[in-house]
Length: 380
Image (cartoon, rainbow, N blue to C red; front, side, top):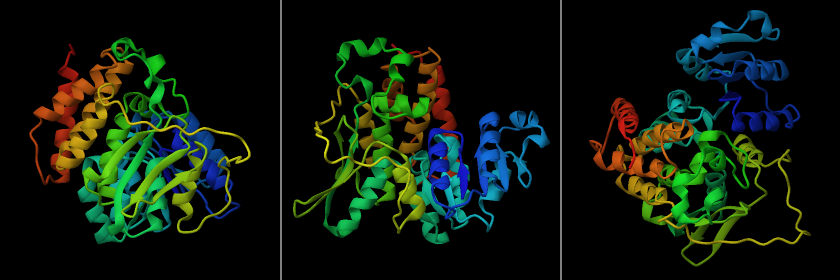
């Protein structure tokens, strides 16, 4: 296994799954951007052949004796790309957050690896290019997002031609019932208090704005080759039903489990087999209530942006993702209001120089442009 982004929440859960595999999986590579203390602790625990620190300044502070015997250190994004392509790597867990994960995921797909994809931004930014590359290289892309993992499992119940629609579930975040007029005064601390999931700050803010559903709509569009009009969102506060697939005969197949990312991670690592693992299990003897409701798109306009970008294709997904990353960063730093996140994304998406069939280089140029536009935007 090569675990990219091993110090983040998905990376840490992945290491739990590897440790519980009774030797079925071994860790060959661990990679992080600059969280060197956590990375070195993981290296002592997992004893990989390689650790990669992408940030050169952070790597310069690492003493060679801090690595366990037999573990070597590589530095920089080029080194990570080269190691991901190594024949020793069977499966790559792509868990680097945001657009920063595109490059290494591209390298893994180009090398024909099996990629457990937690970095949804790869397909949001360059879905058609990545899926075409996978078809040429023979790479397999398996989703780690709980929603897309659920869809992947549910699709096994019928033929693609018989799918009426995919329904992605959403917890609704911490502000599902908060008065709409008070959302502008939401603080970062309030937005980071997710009711059911423990995630990193950027993903947690995306859940609070429901921008995570926008990105997941775009990801599903390309991952499952499903037109945007066949992808819906349903709010489900308990986060037990992770997504549903409705077939043309009216049957609805859902995947249910307690909210624990170790299950979709393990599914991606063991597919097509299933094994016992560390994820929490259901207690079916305990009473429970499952609620469902349509999303309030006036409260959470990000959902509309997701459908718009998925329908339009081209550079729309990359621009929306970059604008959102920049806006979330400014919100966490106190530079934008909570409601400005979706508003700034809307303005940048509407005004960007759209390209229907961009190259990867053109996508990266517009990624940088969108971030600069958000940096200049002062809100209302």
